Amino acid sequence: RLVLKIESLDLAAQTRALMRSLQSYAVAHKVQLTLRAPQDLPAARGDREKIEMVLENLVDNAIRYTLNGGTAVMTLSAEKGMVRWSVADEGTGIPPLQQPYIFQKFFRGENGHPRDTHGSGIGLYIAKAIVEQSGGEIGFSSAEGRGTTFWFTLPTARG
Image (cartoon, rainbow, N blue to C red; front, top):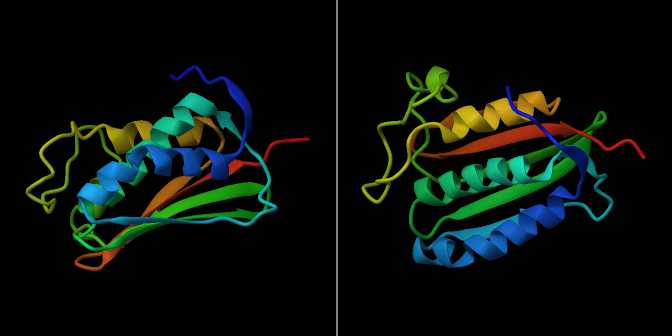
């Protein structure tokens, strides 16, 4: 069980900061990072450091699995008392037979790029635990050879 320090979060600002820190990594892989977020996005509730881990894992995966010259688009929105964050890549996609196992501990897909040499297969497992214990949900949609979109929601902060 994770111990969470719940506070008000500006997910757009956290995402912009992460994009800056990963910029050279993205450039090295010829991936363009883009953010779409409304100006009036409400604050979310969550543990700043642990949500940072979730963001970093999802964006890192999007960069690693995006084909050279592609784009990874992060989108934020508010819906029904939740803030929704997503990253859509133009990568290899996840084969249908592997999709049920994506959030399992130590699972690693077999269709990564040759450059994908690191990782233990626990990033998405940990991300799921953090998001769910924060009161949100996490999921994805994917089409093999066309890319993947990972998303999660967090409750909005209460004034």
